Length: 179
Ligand SMILES: [Zn+2]
Ligand SMILES: [Zn+2]
Image (cartoon, rainbow, N blue to C red; front, side, top):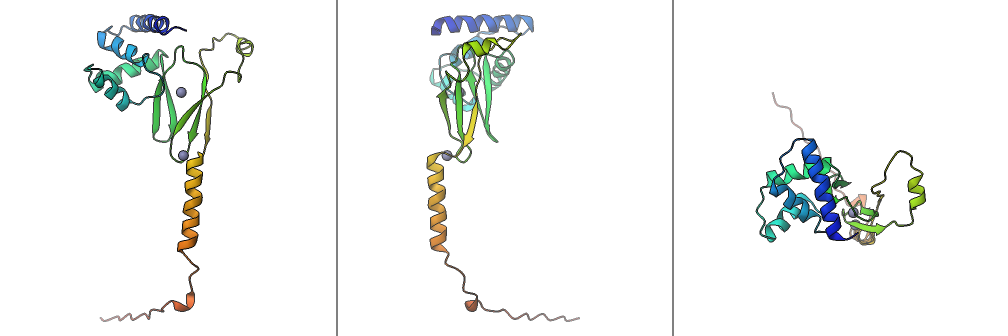
């Protein structure tokens, strides 16, 4: 789908949502929506805030949080919980289906396409439901982390030779109870 067509469509969806829920249609909210749909990939609140500042768009963090909440509610933005403390956002409409590969050690996230995971025919078999997108989370350890773990184990086994109990000095207990 063309980017401009997507942008127009999401604006329409957002307007519908704001009208239905009697929220104000402020230019800031539309600018945030437009900005999110101009960037691909995952973002968090800090990176979103910074990238808007970079484009000389002054917006308060409060407005940003408030708008993200609205966008989550109307399904234009999706929130991923990639790890205990890692939540990332991503545009939801017109975004190609993809899987997320998450390293549980360093928290890095990669995306892979899942085009043949779920065919259009299979999607049609889901009755009384319109599939917008789907995503799979694949958790594991990346090669960098597993290599680092191996190296660390190797280092530890080298650095700590078995303790020789004979060399241990026995400390004499000299407790004196004076009353
Ligand atoms: Zn890793
Ligand atoms: Zn993603």
